[in-house]
Length: 90
Image 1 (tube, rainbow, N blue to C red):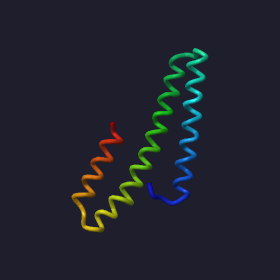
Image 2: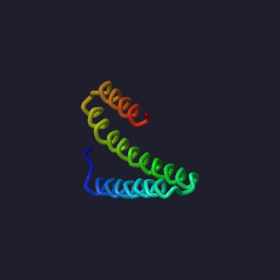
Image 3: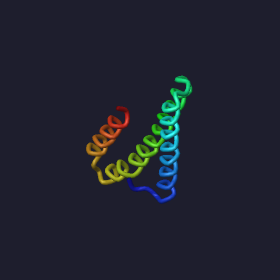
Image 4: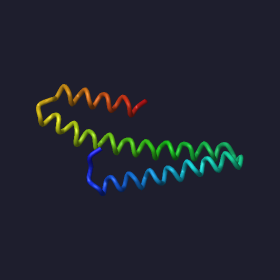
């Protein structure tokens, strides 16, 4: 992933928060807290992780795909974009 340091730092901060959310979910399960509350936290962690993935996907599109398009490698670029989208949506 090639991006500027500010974007990278923001992603790393988000990932740290997600780590904290996962630890919180672990604690909630250990303490046998209310299932609906745990599911709410799981949904929040999943949404946060999706946002990280979307940011990485956007970076890939803007940098890697644009580079391939500028080098007149549109078929390769489309293939890379479809592969990235397929992996992200699994």
